[in-house]
Length: 322
View 1 (cartoon, rainbow, N blue to C red):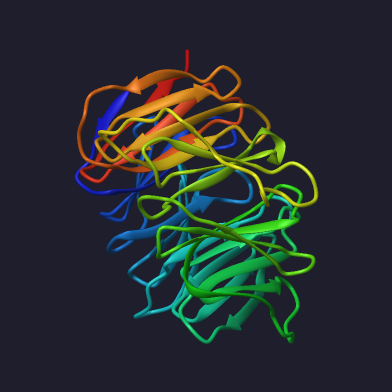
View 2 (cartoon, rainbow, N blue to C red; view 1 turned 90 degrees about the vertical axis):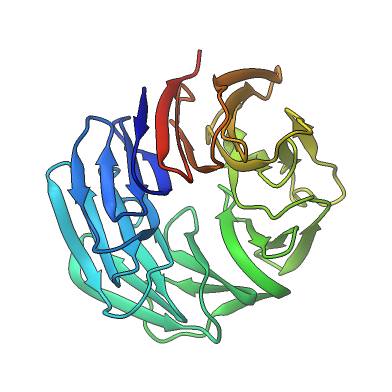
């Protein structure tokens, strides 16, 4: 099943019930069944699943945070004149977080009156909740700041590393926080003791990463194949080598997604192709063989059976993994 939209695909995600939904640069949220929600007056800059698993929470360049479902759109927040560069949500705590400049905002989907604002020295590029949804991390220049999401007055726990941090992912056990950087490198911290993990050697910037196989592997983009780092034991990937799957010298992997509790992963390439792979056997399954614009969004269902993708020119699709 393929679609052709008139705008950049910001995000492709699967709802809890299994249907795909796309967030676009023209401000619309589009569901697999053809339903269209006019969510923003301008571009959607960021998107995540709502804590309920139904519909998307999106941030726009109109300063609004919106929850879009097939039944309609509901405004969560409005910050006129601001760009909402990052959003995140936790199904465990029901909290929603979003970034606007140097501010990190937290709202509670179960309590419309609840709100917190945490201020940073530099702009926040990305945010992520820990596995329990109690702490929220903000990627900024010089490292990542960790906050207890519901506590009003507090000092952040700062994980320092020089440079600009632009992407975040917590390991499923909450012990490690990984950051992709503006440089061609991946950095991480063991949260308990601030131990640094420096994982370099990438030919291009890491734009996408996700934990799979019950947290035993971190897969990332940023190379000619999908890069898989082992995360077994108390020291994680320290002193270990990454494996590269699906090496292709003609293209770079720019997006990755996978099964949180399984071995299936998928990769989106800068030449528009999409493939899936069972890491146990490492057999590549082409899902989109024709070339085109770079893949900008990618998602896989939790059972590993379906993949949704979108590209920079507005092409999108949903494929079954055989």
